[in-house]
Amino acid sequence: MAGDAEKEQNARILVVEDNPDIREALVAILEMKGYDAISAENGRQALECLADDEVFDLIILDLSMPVMNGRQFRNEQLKDPRIKHIPVVIVSALSDQVDVDADKIMIKPVDVDILLTTITDILRTHKSGRPD
Amino acid sequence: MADQINSAQRIEIEELDQQEAQAMLAGDVSALQRLWADDLVVNSTANLIASKHILLEMISKGLLRLRVYERRAVRIARFDNLAISTGSEISQLIGNAREFKLFTSYMNVWAKRADRWQLIGRHVGMIEKGQAVSPE
Image (cartoon, rainbow over all chains, first blue to last red; front, side):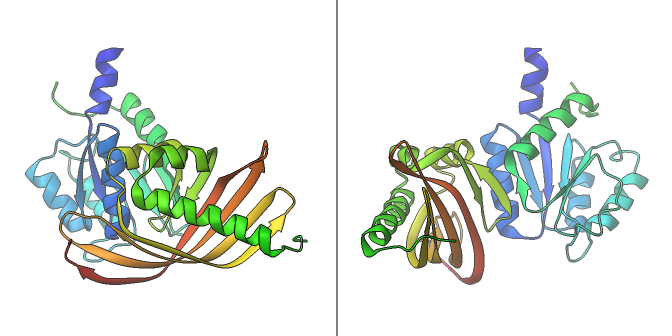
């Protein structure tokens, strides 16, 4: 449906990544594709973003980060009923340590075409919890 | 085994490398359309693997702009209708608040198809990220 496609393109995505080169590139690509992309440098900052405004449709999460890593963030997210439903795509270099509950796990380097397809698929199948 | 490469063949690939670097620096989408194969695969320092269509869209929308871009081939090898050039690059992406000089290594893979050389693969690895500089 056109309405659904429009909603997917306007979806709000939180990019949680400590490497500024990767973070800025991901945000630029997502915005280029019509998403509203917000970034956080670590899990703590991501939780603060979500506390201020829990209306996100998807989270792209790195695992290895200072202050609060992706695993700790995911544990905190799943404890909070306001934000636990938000789907998570893990993007990690730690190919031997990705035993984290997530909607999708991708190992760096990430194929941008596959990431964008994954985001579209997840947004289509998930209830975003975002008010209409 | 790689073929023996003569100086004319080396110069031909070096010139392609330089044309491509100049097109990137100028944001010349039509030149890049010509120099890049439709099935080009690029693995960048941002750990993102991108296709031609994504890269051209980023360049045409001004999301990927370079202030500095220099390339120096260290070795060039030929394998029938394939050529590999590898060496070092210095680049500086145009940013809003701060910019960094990136010192990287690269490997470009060129293929001769229908009598025309096109870039089919590229990998860039970070050697060192320079100090932040203010945009000029």
